[in-house]
Image (cartoon, rainbow, N blue to C red; front, side, top):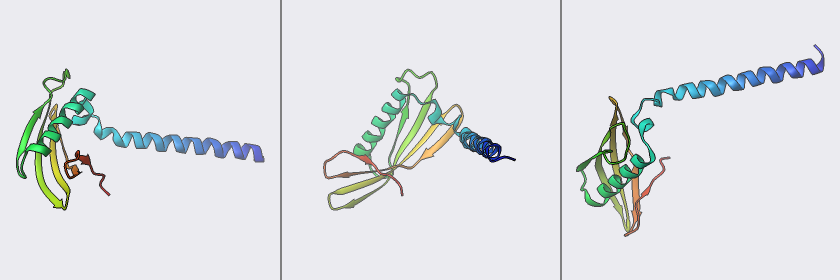
Length: 129
């Protein structure tokens, strides 16, 4: 094989491998297609965020609130139970662990975000490391 033919062969094989890898990654995310989050529209997200912040502000550890997307205009019914799992304080910093159990079309998923705030500031979602 000439040098040019060999280079073209390697580029073609490399392109095919890259295409297969990208396709495999996309296929691996197929399990998310029928989860409650896949049915959520922006108005659902905004509504549930408000419900989570209300729970953070108003509920005690162990208490929960139910949320339903009735007024968001989404034709798919989505509901959730938002629970305050625990609260930790360190000086002026308060952190709360939240449980969000989402349900839609017979599928469910559980989210476990943590929110913290400094003094009387706003709740901020914490990145998990």
